[in-house]
Image 1: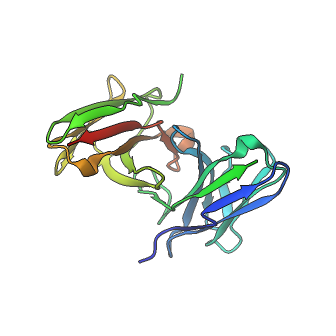
Image 2: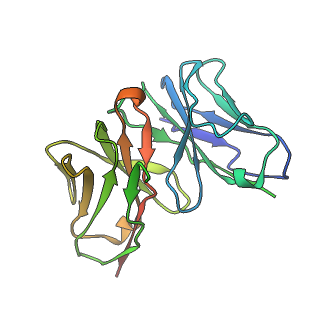
Length: 115
Length: 113
């Protein structure tokens, strides 16, 4: 079956612009996660959705970052007033349900470059 | 101090040799652990879970040492295709009981002919 998909694969924007990154999880997966990965680092947790609600958004760095999952499937990560420091690969993952022993399946990521 | 720490490497390994590396974690309440593999400019993929008693999957062996708070990964008979970054994942208990992943920065392994 299809895995997690993310669009766009690459996004170049200018400082101060608004961007939206989309994630389409594996069908039937109720849990969805967003991570950010900088060069030479591991993925850093941003936000976790269980169904439509954000169950844990403790990783969002500031209020310029916001994510939604209105129908419990596709999610959009929104970044306002982008800064050069936002440049990274944004990874989305999903799992059937959340849990300490449950594998998370990752999408290929969106490489965001802020000029 | 970081929650999860890994030696970044690179570990340069001749084909056919054995390589092993550790991942240390700071929170003694951590309840579960994984190794993920990440190829260059690709997404992380699950390599194996780490069980308390240790576990093996083909040429890969994972161990957990709760007393010293580290997990290890050993790769036997290394193949060129094992070249990748290996990410340690620690799942904390208590306040992150929903299963929040904490990643290490990764250990790079380069297998040479």
